[in-house]
Image 1 (cartoon, rainbow, N blue to C red):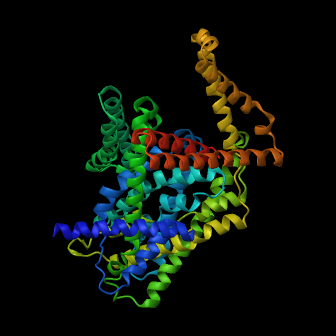
Image 2 (image 1 turned 60 degrees about the horizontal axis):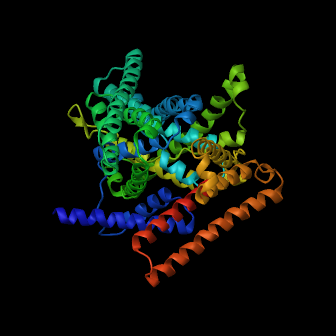
Image 3 (image 1 turned 90 degrees about the vertical axis):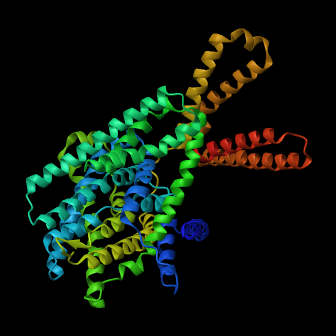
Length: 531
């Protein structure tokens, strides 16, 4: 019955929300906590089985998750760090798939090299949400976050291409290297091309059609599905179509959207992405009953041996890759040495340790066909089990330990002072505003008090930005600025309490009260983000 399924979905959303709040309370990253919770729930007798359909992940979940990640990625930062991003997203994926392929072929009886590449393609891409959610709130160099986020935009595409080539090789029994290389490049290039074409079409729609904030927000949800489905229909990379189109539209978004659209779409997207991520990660844990099916042909010792060894090797491969991929370009090219600061080994290790696997790996494993040329697909259940263990192993071991590793290695922010940058930006905006007022409203400034007060306000902003306190390196000045920001936040809370008093006294209209509350929300957001 449809109402039973609907009740199940609503219950799952409610459980996800409650568990996420609990994860915040105990200080565990919510993707890790949700996977563990789903795993525990799967052991409860009588619980309904939630079988994750790979088509559902690739078609329903993946496009908006990728689009949101692309939208919030700075194209400038992405392009700045394109070399390490591509070395991880393409080079490391191929390296991991190759190493896992030869290892599994040598270790598992009857496991062909092509099957090894299927397994390697499945478990090669780390999960973006897991890494960024664990790193959220930790003071680490911005370069690390940018590289990990950029890697996650591309590695799903490269891993899925490796996976599909390996499946085609098993089905046909033939593998020609140059043909596989051409197919890889064609699938990737055409996926990017389709994404950019659709992105330009949507750009024209947003810019020249009489849209509203609600229509614009709705179109942003339609866009990733349009890009993904179109590219996949022609057997090209839907992932790269969504990523390329999302990066293009994000870069041009300031030309397209009003402030109402930006505010509305931001809040709607945050809610939807939170729910999608929550469902995906709890569903990973709930897959245990489905994963355990068909493993009667293997002993417990074999399952543990294969899974743990491949999990450990997967972690080690990434660590082994990141050091030469980081330092060799510095040694070989003078242009890189002169333009980029040599990263410390501690920051490189953090990138290597941030290799948690997630839902794309599980969906790929589930999408392995049940039958091949009329016979059961060999070792399909073992591939699914190993993938499940690799996801759990990396999420729990690396995910839970990452904050402690960062603290142990004493990795800190690279000194990029957002407070000072915010002050500089405010001063530039105030200077431009002041020049405009003096050029166009000089008489009104001299004659009317509101104009004069606004001019004085802009002059104070410029004076504050130029003051020694803001740019001083001594601890006393920095402590004073922290106290100043804390005082502003405390005053906002005082204002909120007074608003509640006014609301109880019913002396102002609710529309005015809500508008003032919105002003305070925006002010608090500005103070918090500039910290």
